[in-house]
Image 1 (cartoon, helix red, strand yellow):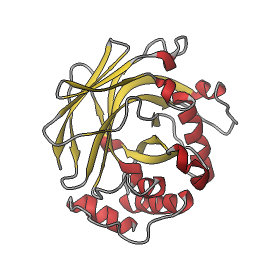
Image 2 (cartoon, helix red, strand yellow):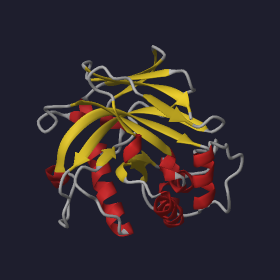
Image 3 (cartoon, helix red, strand yellow):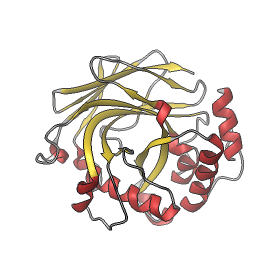
Length: 253
């Protein structure tokens, strides 16, 4: 399955069917994901964290999933830059407004929702690009989503939030537009226990999988305004707190 996904991604070939028996547990999904990361060979620069639907939490044993973000697909969207982000023709493509947390030295200590902030050295605004050659990636449950890199195809780094330690991030308004039309608005209060909960989940999950967390690792903490499907030729804009703007365009690979 890992080889099939890698081949489809490398050749930009749509997958009309899942390439094998669909994983039924998160352990099975992460086994496929780990095999693909090892075969891929690129350096992982961060991890996306996504939400598992409430009605599936009991079945899959948790409320979040994760997937790798490769360093060569992390783009700078500051200083007026509007990077072009590639998605798979005939596959799935979406863009999401997300808060991005950069981890420093995580070490071996145990964390909780408050102390996990101690190992975060920067918080930025950003956009996650979700894309898979398998168009049905999100229609078969979280294990299928996680098995193909968590449906990630890149990250756009937006402006930093300078006062993140002292402000209530959960109350920050976020707005998302595609080609200038507002398609979503929300605050991080909709994100379970918020972005720091996503960081805590990621640290615990990667430790269970035996995956190292080097300093500088980015955490894309989860969709705030929703998962907004997008097509090549469109532009996505996210506005945080009415003042931090980040944008990208989307193109076919």
